[in-house]
Every structure is written in C-alpha cells, then in structure tokens.
Length: 324
Image 1 (cartoon, helix red, strand yellow):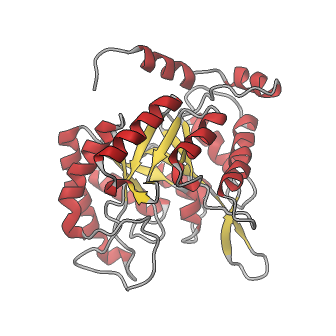
Image 2: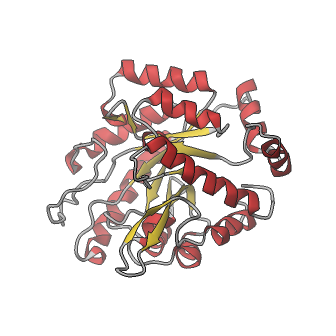
C-alpha cells in the first residue's frame, strides 16, 4: 500500500464522504452528483461493451466498477493489450475498481466433484489444477487495476455440502495464506451453485479460517435461492465478516412458489432493514449492483436502470449515518 495520499486518492475519499443531505439536494435539483456510497455495478450486467457500461456508471456518478467479463471474455482470459485498454477506459471515466470478480474455485472440488449440469461460468473454463496459476495471475490483475480485493467461490455445490466442507475450508485457508503474502483480500461469495451458498454457511467458514485475507461477499439474493431469509437471518451470520456486497432482488410467484429475479426494491428481500443495519454497523466496504433481472424486452441497460433506481430510492429513504 502507498504511504502518501495522492490528489486522486483525496478526491476519491471526498466522494465517498460526501454527505447524504447534499446528494439528496443535488438529486432534487436534477443533477448527477457523486454518491456518498462505495457503490458500483458489475459491468457485464450492463453491457459487454466496456466503454458503454462505464458510460452508464458515470451517468449516475457511481465511484466504482466491478470487473468480470469484458468484450465477451472472462477477465482471466484477456490479453495484456486488452487489459491496458480496459485500464485506460476506467481512468478516462474517473472510476475505481472495487474488486476483480474472478472464477476462482468455481469448478469441481477434486475430492467430491458435483454432478454434471449446465452452469453459468461467465466464459471461464478452469479446473482445480489451474488454481495456483490463477491465484498468482489474479493477484497481479488486482494490483494492475488498483484494487486489493478479489472475489472467489467455494467449488460447485455437491448433494451433501457438509461432507465437502473440510476440503473447501482447508483449500480456501491455503489460498488465504497465499493472498496474505501478496497483500490481497479474497472475498468469498455465498453462491447457491457452490458449497458456501447461504449467510450461515459463509459465516461459519469465515470464522473457522479467521483470516483478515479471507472476507465475505455478502449476497442476499443468492441466500434466498437456498431458502434462507437474508435479512435478518443471513445477515446475522455474516455481520462484520464481509468487505464486499451485492444487491439484487428476488420475487416469488404466489401460485407456484417459483423464484425469479426482480429490480431491487420490488422483491421479497427486506433491503430497507438490511440497509439500515449496514448504516448502524458503520459498514465501510464496497457494494455492487448485480442486476440479474432482465425486462421482457431483453434490454440490459434499462433493466439495470430499473434496479439501480430502486436501490437509490432505498438508500435515500434510509436514515442517514456516517460510514456507508
């Protein structure tokens, strides 16, 4: 980490500390102003056209972007020329990278491979044999993009995740020890397709490993998919243990009980309670909208706009306090 505060760092810190009351007055006046939140969007949820995605993020004066796919390629498969181009576009938009959304550990656990089925790998095709190489590559990527945070997973979910737990724990503990040597924080996401899918499962593993270099990515929407009530139940398990968070919402068909994605604020997740709890706990980590919801017309940009407007409404209505 650098020991001096650059002008850019100062401006970024100023953005993140901008009082909510000023933001509300600016919004009331119809102006886009820097938000007082460490909030961004996963860019490929908007568009595979990276510049177009960052144009949208900048339109809302959000300070961060999360990198997963760019130009129809997983970030781990980009050439150095493409990475440099991405870095230049980020700098042109005055944005910061919240984290590298890597595909690490989003593959089969060797000791207990999951059943074959179609899963969303975001254009990544790796196995556990690639892990060491991927870790070193993603640490270099994080440094290249000016972030200390890398999002990871916990291997494809097996029929009995409890039996896989010791293997997952030990492998992620080893990865955290390697991350510590590079000064990188691994942010483990609770993912329903993986062995750590709920807040309860995430909290248990983070407490067991107990490393400052392994934190959580708390995703309430993913928690719902495994039958957990994300707030207050799931949040109670991960409180104080995560450094990154995803926002997406879920609706439930009253007739069939089927779950599907919804704009933030239009689903069953108690985001009002969740946001209030984040404020009360003085949450200092980053946050990203992971839209997932798609309108009937298939327009990703406008689907994200719906979801973002819902999230911003919830943030505006939440009682103000420092830290978020």
